[in-house]
Image 1 (cartoon, rainbow, N blue to C red):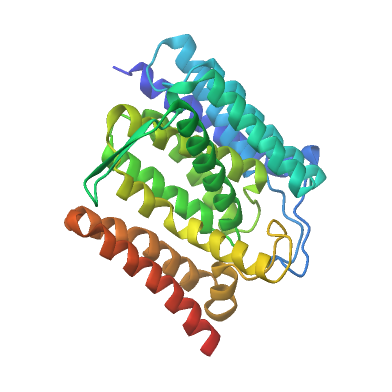
Image 2 (image 1 turned 90 degrees about the vertical axis):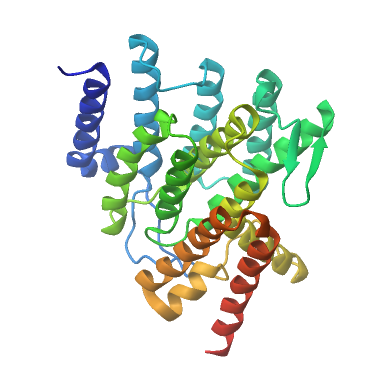
Length: 329
């Protein structure tokens, strides 16, 4: 007997196949292209429609879940509204190339208003397991800290999407680890499908995620991680730090370097770790190095949970050693 969930997935597959078959027509209709320049690696204009693919799947999952009663989506209508605003902001940026300050201000505004209306996403306490210390935050401390964390992760993710497969493979690692920690995250399982379709298009350099994709997906991941930490206690602070360390440390290094050189920290350049590695090693080796820097620390943490500090410091040290090695080549 065919279950309702199987029918759910069947029609989701059909939707993604239709998107794939009509991709060229959709790209022509939307008319948004990532134009090559001296900072970018690709040679020809590429439509950044990956965000649209994920958003279509996201809305499909929400609508069918709400109508059918199949429990695969545990966020409410308010979450849909604000995550949609994040997607629209990214889409407008892809189309109009928004002023960085205006984009940043808009992003903060959406996050703040969302947290005001849904304060269950506030991080009001967390346990620093590596030093055996509980941190309890007041409402205003919690509000500021949560806004800062979400904002930093979104910006770090946006900066980390630089070469083919890089961010999509990073998403794959995040999705897999989240399911490893909580097998009931059906929303994540269903988002594997558009991820696979996107990886296929991205591998062929036919499609990028665009800001609509990186902003939307990173916002979704940030809220799921917060929800898992607050409600299910499935994710420790140590795990969250290691999940997000690579985009985070690369963003921090770039911001410090740009500010010290009296440049706008939000203006892009080719000093990201993926650019530096790509120039020397090419696409495959670069992605293997970046995957290793994300996965191995998490694997080690699950075997040696009491040695988080050493794993974290080791990861940071390897990151800077790679940069040092690059400069000597």
